Amino acid sequence: MRHVLTMILLSTLLAGCAPWLPVQNINVGMTKAEVLQQLGKPTDVAGTGNVEYFWYNPLNRFWQRYYVRIVNDKVESYGPLGSEPGAVK
Image (cartoon, rainbow, N blue to C red):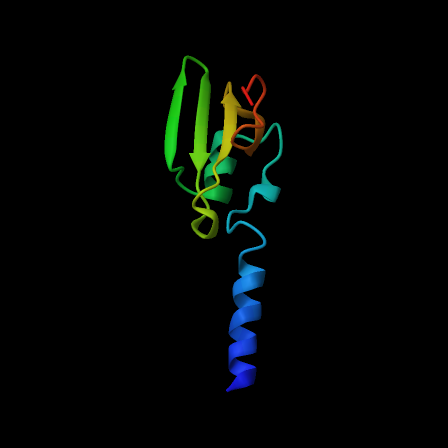
């Protein structure tokens, strides 16, 4: 029983270390279609003209948000919310 509890505890700790969102697969210059293929449907979307923002919330880090900024159908920037260019900290 002790081994089972230890394995559950370790699994929980390891699962909480990294977001269940493959943001590391996103690169500047990717197309909007490639982003949707890698990350799936965003939690929220906004934009005007040729600029779009996609926001994602990982299931295991519901308090953290990630953004992808797409300009002219290409990724211009991405990362944790608050790290985008011009963000007020």
